[in-house]
Length: 252
Image: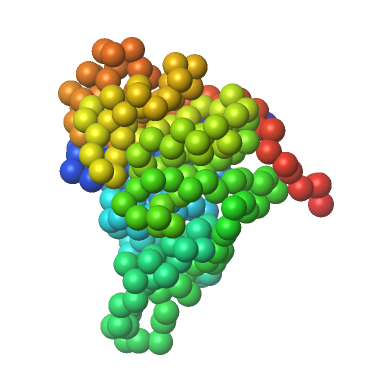
């Protein structure tokens, strides 16, 4: 099986011209699991794949990561072939936050009779979950408040940090199999996001060599990060991943 990561957007919440920081894990050239559902990210997904995602993992509920859900609801609920079948893998502590943010609106349809979640198959997840016969791991990150934001690991292939401050102790556990690490990084950090000086201070050089940086503030900042010798993701980039060593369920 060939694995790849497609960046749908790479910008922070203010850098809409770079697209919201979303990505899709591809398997054998087809979309397999999409990470987050920002408005610009969803537009990029549809423009490239010609449809809407069938499975998503939600890292946290800031709007640059979930603002596309209302549009995804419409595309899913009004399509009988998709209604109730679009899988949303949501860390259990994030479920109530996601509901408050996007699902708890009176009469999602003006005529009533419909719940927002009727369009989806919501799967609350803990430290790991199964998708498409493959086990993925969920890792805690440092973003705003404890138990509100998470990353994702496909063992041997990919670690996606989501929005985070540096997490050296977490990556020591969850990025110990040579994975590509897609890491939040701007030119300058702040209390909820990493800056390049933070990563250089907290991470060994060997780990930084495996990082590809995203969630920066402008194209110029991306160029500056690249000029410092780092791999920087651009919207639309597709990165080949190593073959996953994650546990797989026996074929039926």
